[in-house]
Image (cartoon, rainbow, N blue to C red; front, side, top):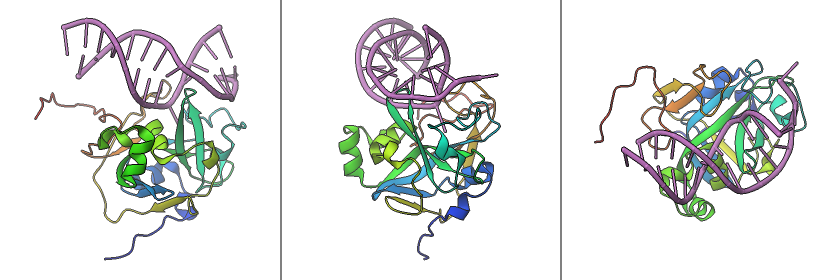
Amino acid sequence: MALPRRLSRDFFARSVHEVAPELIGATLLVDGVGGRIVEVEAYDQDDPASHGYNGRTARNASMFGPAGHAYVYRSYGIHWCLNLVCAEAGRAEAVLVRALEPTHGLDAMRARRGTPGVRQLCAGPGRLCQALAVTRDHDGLPLDEPPFELYARESEPQIASGPRVGITKAADLAWRYCLAGSPFLSRPLRLSASPVRRRG
DNA sequence: ACCGCGATGCACT
DNA sequence: GTGCATCGCGGTG
């Protein structure tokens, strides 16, 4: 078996629409704590729902590059959300990391999150940042240096896509990518024609 | 299972 | 003042 391959900055220096689905199954660690990425969303320059849509500000500066760095912002005054910056400098594209399947540092995550079930540890962008202790201090840091570790997936997962969560603008775009069937998603993927399900 | 709401920072076509 | 790329809790079927 091969050693896991680290994702380079070049990996991110492409369209966010290529990068986002390829991140499903990758492993993200911060100071050794984290897990497998099971849910992300893409945000690009021409997207009215994106923080970069109305141009560069002090808050979103790191979203404008360079690629392969973190963009961390505060959400609803309470939570932190982590993005992985893509594309060339000067263009604002980033992948919002929305959920992990916890694999490393479960005890640290539980201590930070207040002992919820494993499925709730990193199920959502705010929860994930709390579990990994990501804050504004991480904004702009390179993803290929400590405290970050990012490893490519070792096999091609089954990926499902659908509309993004919690936005009002451009809500029809299917730019949310999930590991199909994962129990660690922030919420179930909304499908175009989902069958009625009973428990079981 | 759903729905409503409060907490709280900060940018602002 | 308004509107969020959210979460957890408490109320109601």
